[in-house]
Image 1 (cartoon, each protein chain N blue to C red):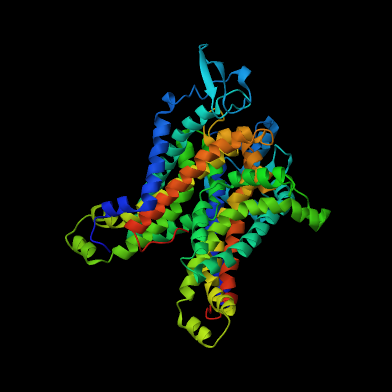
Image 2: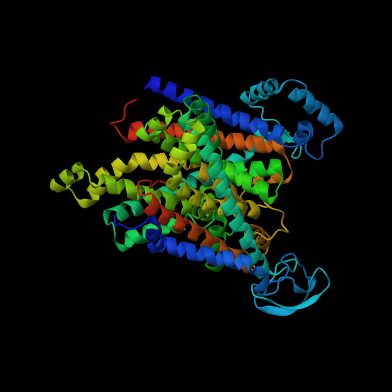
Length: 313
Length: 293
């Protein structure tokens, strides 16, 4: 187990290295003087000199990379000259809304998709199955921001069930926080439900053909228990795998959803950073999101142990 | 399996036919845009700001000429005709979808064949692909556009790059499955150059799943381009793309939801049609390959 953990952690190193090199190259591959790019439009010539020294621009590229990577490891992601703050601080301020949205979406999507997919597999070919399959194609074809505006129009403006836009901090009370977050989560969950329902249906329908299902039914167990305890339990590994792989999809969706609902999270920080050509912030956000992706997939691999006792590392 | 050719099976498949008809219609609308009651999509007339759908009047064009024009979908907040912009936007979306798919498949195919066929290249290439996959596609595309500037070719490149790892993985797996087949060994025994083996013996066997994958890439490319434009990070806002029209309409959404919803009425069927086409192609060409994630 520990050996597995060590090996698995080691295997993320190349991924992290490639991500780090990519992020480092963002500034180097952009045409123009790296110091001017990092300093942004408002940088003075003293700023530029300071940046040149910091980056070691006269040294070879790989030395510059090591310098940069060493700082990143110490938590120094650079400095936003546009917002006049360290990048790490900016990211820390914006993490709560973004993670709330991402986790809320995931919980909502799993809560909707698992029962839908299981029922569709249980009654394959029924109207419900056809509806789920049609939804899973459609859900993949409608962009998040269109879903967002349609839901705002119908549920927030016409029916007034939800507030239209904005975000409330968790510290202001869980009630207002959840109420404000419900519509964005629902918006982003549509694509995710489409994906997860499809995978759940495939995995459960495969499990339902197994001998142990026949045995369970022969014992006289209720159909409900057969589905939840035997079929769904055995479908858990593929479903969780897809959750891990599509974490990147979720994080990308968060960026867009935040813009639609005016949520002051990392997505908005990204968009503002690009508009202001604030490259250190852009680098920081890309690195942060990629590390989340790597961490999620690490957790997914570990969760196999709990989900399927047959798996031993 | 019925003893018909793939071509006739394709034509008989409902999803393929439906998707192809919708796409052909859209392509025609885009091509024939100048003759379908449109004016210059960049023309702004200050006397027609935010007019309702169906309003008409004499519009002054940039060259000073006046034409009688009906705003079938209303106008935006600087007095441009939404119908004209949406129709011309069809061209951009279809071009981005097609070229992105072609580029991503070409790049992924090359890298995948290298990784699958040459064991020395495999480890390094695949680690690079793993690293690229760790960055959310939208974010990577945003970053690339920020670096390279927003023109049609750079937007296409920026959307294609995040799709490359998936194609590479697919092709690599196919090549590894094929490289020890007797017909490849036979070619190698005849001292056929590696490049020829890859091109002549291996590529044709990987074509069906590649076409399917390319179709799905086209669908997501159309979406990603719309997202980039919508965020204000894609093609410049005067270029008529569906995302740009929506971004412009976003500010006045509560008073005039139409400016966001009209382009969506084109965007959603486009992506749906490409996805249906992809599902159908997969059924017909490649029954074994049924995963898309």
